[in-house]
Image (cartoon, rainbow, N blue to C red):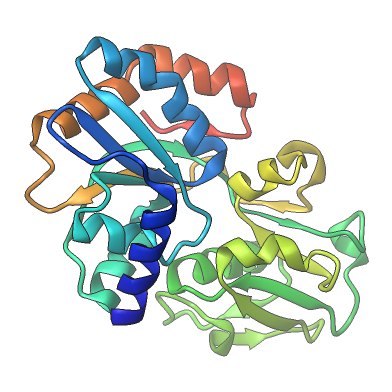
Length: 259
């Protein structure tokens, strides 16, 4: 925990040039689409009397610690299962204040054009954290590539009971996976990273999570801070009809409003 706190403090010292006060809201976000969505609501928050400072963070180990410590007022990069796992494993006390959008998780490759081309012994990159790792494995199971132990709640590669293609799994931090596309045969990549790469979910995904995914991306703050005026203003600005229309128009179904 001390190392993570040091990482968060170092990052914030280098990247945050505003100090949170009653009229300033500092939010740590993933670059796309999270930062773009908050850039859209910035003028609305200004009308409500608040300055929004958007701090882009690509290392998932930082924003929850920084939010817990008060260096960030809120963060916007994760889904609820990931938050619950973080609260449990890191002793955090963070809460969801809004569900904003769904980014379908998909599998991508530079080596094959169709999932049927996947060869025996292929290497597959998935997230090492329990929620996203389980999420990826469920997609593979639904596609008939593996079978998982029916008793497994948060499945890991150790819960695979049938693996006809003898797939080899590499577990990595989510933000690192896009960099492995040249090294693995198949990679589970979140939509935000797909968009960062300039790829298309609709055109490039070989396997894709259903649109009714329970993994909506959420705005998170410290417990006890959820009813503060500025967090309420942030939620009001984000969960507006205008924001919903922006998401629909901007991302053409690759990012889906969850409100």
